[in-house]
Length: 124
Image (cartoon, rainbow, N blue to C red):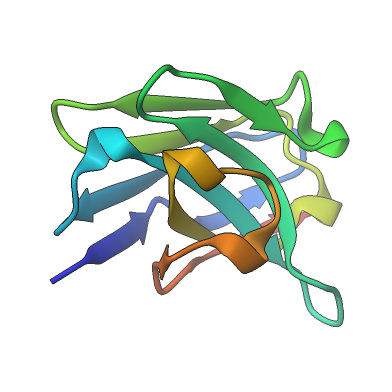
């Protein structure tokens, strides 16, 4: 059974940090890219960052460049999203998802597997 389990969300003040984790199981981790997406109230789902487990190639949406860092521990089949200098506009439910490495992109519509999400709330 494929599972993606997010953890690490919470409430933090602006300027603070959180580290999200995405633990994967049930598929060949090295053959997939893992993406982090978020959905804020009243907004479309947005691709935040993604990483290819195969070669480490990364992507960041412009609004998080320089503040967020994605990394992958292939041995633990876990992808992390380190979020620094958080802003109120980062408030959203954050999801991780997996797509085969040959189809990876920041477009969420192509992703095969999704986690349940973790809430991140940044207070001003």
